[in-house]
Image (cartoon, rainbow, N blue to C red; front, side, top):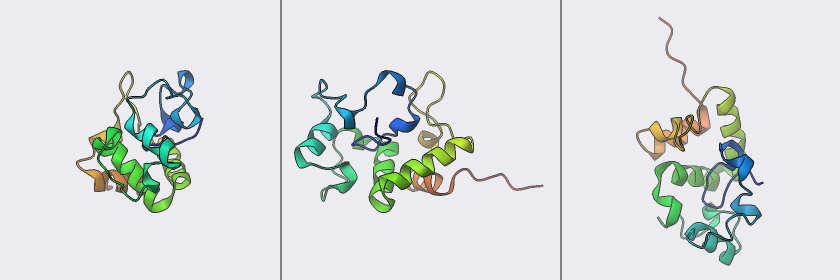
Amino acid sequence: MNAIAYCGLACCLCSEKENCVGCQDGGCEAHGWCKNYTCCREKGLAGCWECPSFPCGEGMLVKPRIKAFAEFARRYGAEELERCLLRNRERGVVYHDAGQLTGDYDRCPDEEAILRLIRTGPVSPASP
């Protein structure tokens, strides 16, 4: 399974990765509803971040976290996105809360805050 989905989802951190092939490896072929999968396959793109029309606001890109992940991949590359996300997990940033498909990145107030969290990781509280 590739680490980052066409839309920008982090397959490398997903709680469902044990039961999912992943879209990059054909896991979404039965899911014609996924606009990002269909568009990237038709255009031969590794992900939405490579598209000249990014961000189009279609499909999964309406979600701030996913759009921010794809924007990060556009700016720095999908490999750097994976590296930062895995580092953040080691530092305690939660991708999915138990039994949920949301986590710490979804609690950020806006896309710029998500981008900062990806890039810099969690900010330690100031010492008293």
